[in-house]
Length: 324
Image (cartoon, rainbow, N blue to C red; front, side, top):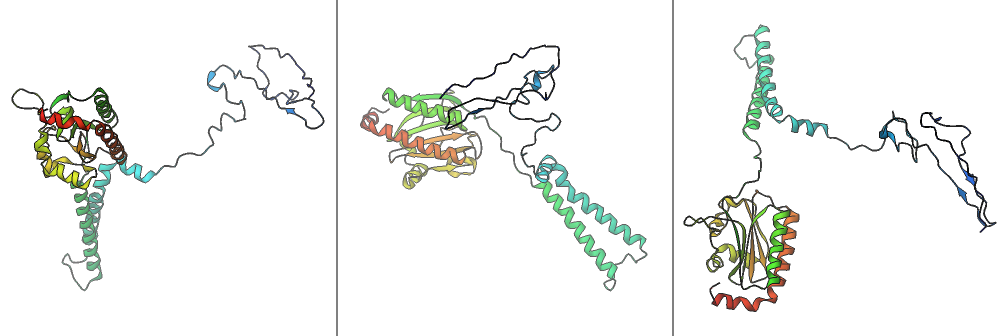
């Protein structure tokens, strides 16, 4: 293809001289010649990049023309005005039925007093029947407002665990298993509301890390009695089902007495089975703090830990004999 000839022109630049906004004689495009089969049109969009005094509007009209006064004309996110207003004025909304009911009751009594009707209700009078119905509706509004004031959603806050920091790792474990357990702890504590992690495998506590209950004698962390824990109903129930158990509010669960090694104010617990030989106990600092995605992710971590611990399962019987 033969090379075309392009006209080059020099544009003088005067910083203090304002350029015309749309010069009529400014070239829009330059046509270049090509071979007989195709013809190439080079559209050279040239626009002055110096937009007077302010850098705020530097690239305002590079590839499209948009007037400054028009602003953004694209799609805007929709707003739900009613829910937003109710959320921002919760107290006023809860008191509104009381105000409406009280005003309605006063209006009925005032209308009764100025209408010249006897104050005693007369069943044969249509006015009396209407007043009784209006009074009943006003009282209903007042009672509704009182109920709304008495029932308020409890705010869920993060609770600082009461206990001591603990990091106990079985010394008989290979370095690869130790790094795998520490990786699981760091991942859970960084992403979820996990503040305590205990791993019991083959009736041996191989990891206790994070916050733990404080013993009254020497102010150290309470030791996990693995042999007693595996005989309890919590462990047996999880092993029998083979599925993850989520205790969203541990304070309401009677089996929390089988977890004395966790801080006393632990809010939520996930019991994740590790195959058919172990379990991971994950304690959180927020009621219902573990989301559905957190639970699924913890299940995958449990499968990974089980695959790692299964490779070294031959060392756990010797650990039990040594009293580890």
